[in-house]
Image 1 (cartoon, rainbow, N blue to C red):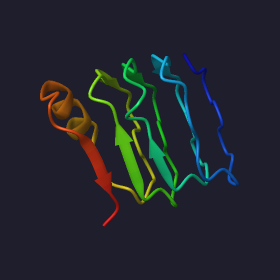
Image 2: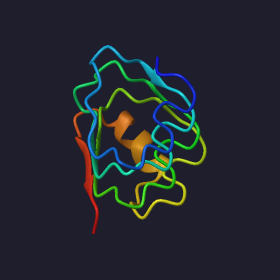
Image 3: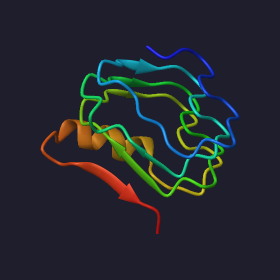
Length: 105
């Protein structure tokens, strides 16, 4: 698991590669970071996204999540220009054959 506020306010960060073994990310993960694209589709054991996951990430243009995600905390992408709802993430968990990928419009 990645703890609370992991890489919080890392404005110079543009990309990140996580190991496939991560099962949960704590609250405020990459909150306020400069990340532009995040592909977690290979993190197949990821089950939980903490509160305020990727909130205040104005530069985020692409997000890919694995179908294994079962819990999404409140504040998901809050204050971000990227729009994907908690409900969309959880709905695709119920439909595991559907790939969860969204590009900014």
